[in-house]
Image (cartoon, rainbow, N blue to C red; front, top):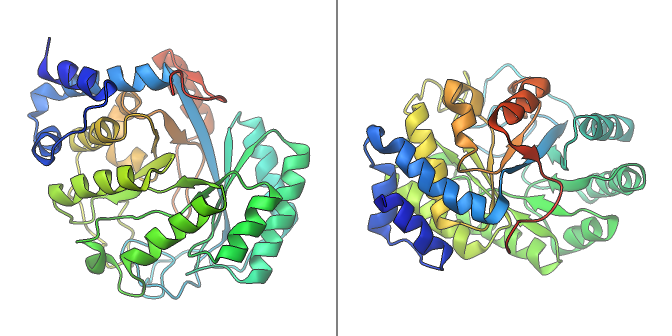
Length: 329
């Protein structure tokens, strides 16, 4: 039995990786990548079988953000050539929900740029969510920034199932990425939504010149936060942002990051998110031996793979779309 298979069995039995063991995954030789993936797959299969959750984003408000996040084309310091607009009409949000339904997506993600939503914007989203819930059998995730308690309560009452607010990077690396809000602000929002009974979703962006220790710290922080869903983004460095030209990732390292997330957060939905096409490239299918969720369609300001190609990828892997709950909880 390989050490990675043995470690996977230990994790299923409740073992938590040490810092050294976690770093060993990221530092493992490329020739061991299939063995590491096999270990991650044993854990993934135990909790999720061969099922894959599908998610789709709609960018309801683009640009015009006062924050200075170095990775983001929508930030106040970005000169990226993107479309900028205020919150779109409810009819457009409903149109996106219809498309999500047609693509057999389980979770429809309503995303808006900005530090946090105004009460008017929350009411607009609430109105759309109520109608979506009446028309389609979709889970709805909102991602609107830093949230107040009363706003979170309104979203919960409207039927919002999940709220996304990524930690993005480690606490140690946070100020290298943004200084207009604190790492603790992000943790506070996650706790606020948990208090209202909304499923917490929080993830990371890998490839922003962080250290491997930072990546381990991210994974362990998400374990402590006990988020239900973990989107793993790989930096797609956009021209006009401070991280323009950053190219520190390769497909094999990206796979190791996904394996790390699975070993440290064994029971959680781990989603291959933004940047998978440009960073995993031809190795995209292998990522699903560790992760159990993907986005279909486009992202916020970058294009994704065609939805039909994603469905074909799942078919080729012998995986099936998951609308339900884990195999073992």
